[in-house]
Image 1 (cartoon, rainbow, N blue to C red):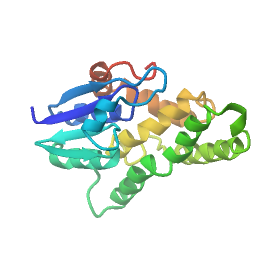
Image 2 (image 1 turned 180 degrees about the horizontal axis):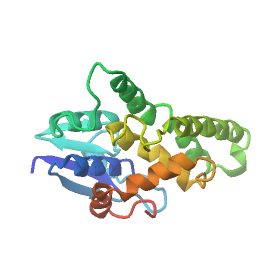
Image 3 (image 1 turned 60 degrees about the vertical axis):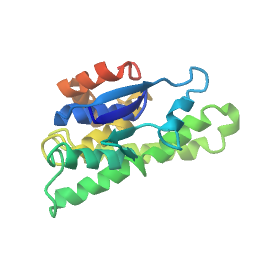
Image 4 (image 1 turned 30 degrees about the horizontal axis):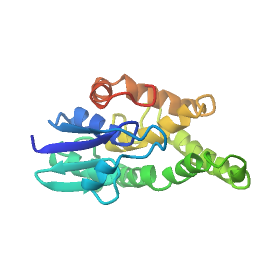
Length: 208
């Protein structure tokens, strides 16, 4: 099998497994476990890519990193353009915005919260700013979930797959009452047969 996903447990690479299940592309999974103390990826991943992070895919010898780039590549090369709005349309422009938002804007305050959580009282000065930024980004996402339960159009898109992780973070942090549309979005994602197949292949995923 030529397509390999280097999958780290409890990580954003879970989205890539889900995407592959949605588009029906065959793939192999190589598993890596986080250090139980530091929660960091194991050194083995450094042999795959110098940053030692996941997701990483290999396709016919080509190594590809970054969730957004991997998602776009897989949709185009293995999905026949599935889950991507037609080029030249307003929906495609919004698709591009959301694809970059998921790993750009949204992940910045999320990572800051994760990192500063280890500092305890030392993070008190910056915590209000982090909380404000999390609320700003999650509120923005909440306001853009359509009545159909998606960020673009009336059906699942690659942008939904990318946005599932920051939405899951919001719910895991106990914010479902504040962002009910995001909570419904996450539940709907998890109810999809392809998501469940990916979870079964990827292993335990943040308790889901």
